[in-house]
Amino acid sequence: MSFTLSNVLITDEIDQKCLDVLKSNGINVVKNTKLSKDELLVEIAKYDGLVVRSATKVTADVIEAATKLKIIGRAGTGVDNIDCDAASRKGIIVMNTPGGNTLSAAEHTCALICASSRHVHQGDRAMKGENWAERKKLMGSELYGKTLAIIGLGRIGKEVALRMQSFGMTTIGYDPIIPGSVSAEFNVEWMDLENIWPRADYITVHTPLIPQTRNLINDRVFSLCKRGVRVINVARGGIIEEEALLRALESGQCGGAGIDVYSSEPPKDFSLAKHKNVVATPHLGASTVEAQQRVAVEIAEQFVDLVQGKKLFGAVNAPALINAMDVNTLPWIELGKKLGIVAAAVNDQNQEFKVVSYGPALGKSAGSYMTAAVLSGLIQNSSFLGAGDSSKLNLVSAPALAKQYGINATSAYEEKAPAPYSAAVSIIFSNGFRVSGTTSGGQALLVEIQNQTFSSPASLCAPVIIFRGNANSQLVPSVAGALVGCGLTVTSLNTSSETGGQKWGVATAATAPSEGCLEALKSLVTAARLINF
Image (cartoon, rainbow, N blue to C red; front, top):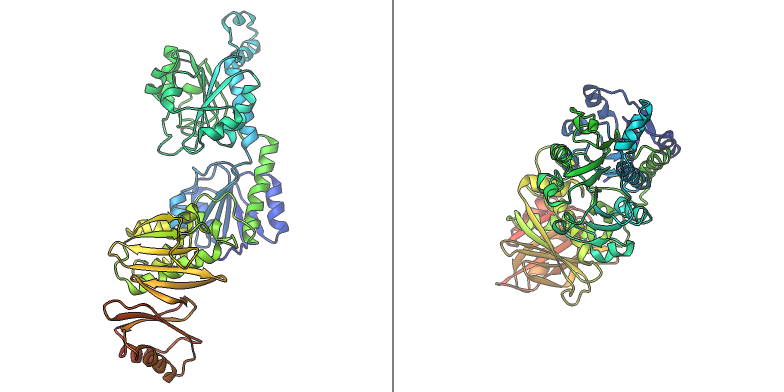
């Protein structure tokens, strides 16, 4: 996959430093924040990079219109304004700047907690209305000794915890990924959600908006909470169900809220924002000079690092590609692709399979990229690939295309590798067919086909002729003779162990054989396939 970037379009307001970094690295940049949806559909075809914030909605039709697009970058946290599935199907990398807004969002959360506790918003309105008597109604409460529940213990959640602990708050929290042993390091007691709700005096959410978190705090949750609980949302609108929050505010079950984000922005209905017990701000969590400069520079530097092949940071849909930029992992990804190509050539039932990684050198995380690598090779060399799909097949798109084609691929890890190898990869199909390989000196090697092993691993270099024939003493000389007779220089010829009177063989030559040469070979063996990697 090429990462040459010539032209980048910026469609939302962003700090000038983003443009400066891109231009200083030889990338042409056009900033146009006034494009209508129809204008964007036309304009996007000119660019191979796109930078947005939250205003531009990068929908599936925009992505389909982007004939050259390779990278979409969001200068901020989250990518809910980008159709990541559509981008993945087209092989487009989607990245964000996960750390750029952290401090600003955490500080804004803390500000809303404090403001809600002391009715700062109501006091401000009273003073502006010259209504000093209103102060009698604005009795607040201290934060000291109260319990703050933090839902989502990532970067922002951690920073909120550290700051609010200085107020003397007890911090508890939940995160489906970060375990209690980690949260304990920053003094947050990990609890499951059902135990959190009754204990919390304040609840703040710091999760992405995904199906599992939409309307996470709802009527049922409010009913489990203490009467007068306060809630804060500086994450994403829709995590707290707005109608349920209004009902809880009206009944007094919720004593107050600090809301910075909304299910639609701007809100279609301002009832929640106007409620007297709500401190409402118009999505200001990342609106600081420092944060905007930080994310502008970070997204530009991430683009440049990718182009220069240094690293891929902040990508949300390309775990395999991230590993492909690691000098230690790249040979294994290349092996996975080639095993996938071989499997597609010699096995006709490729709809369901498991990719097994063996050995500590690969580790448990290998499945995240080895499966994508195998899929990219298998789809490339099979009938699954639809018309027009070849240009968008890469490590990003392969898993998404596999889902579209109904291919079911899973992964597994085994610590002990098959002897005599310290690490290996196998593709095991539902019909029992199996292809295995390893690497040596950065080169991909085939070690097994259909449970028949090669005592001397076969090099998977282009071009390769894979054949199957009768296991007799004439198999190797007859195949070698046929290839030499066609004028080819045979560089290697390996055969596997025998099963059912048959052996697999792999021959490599300096140049690819002609169609006539391949047909001549087929008259000597039971099967023969030419593979150009």
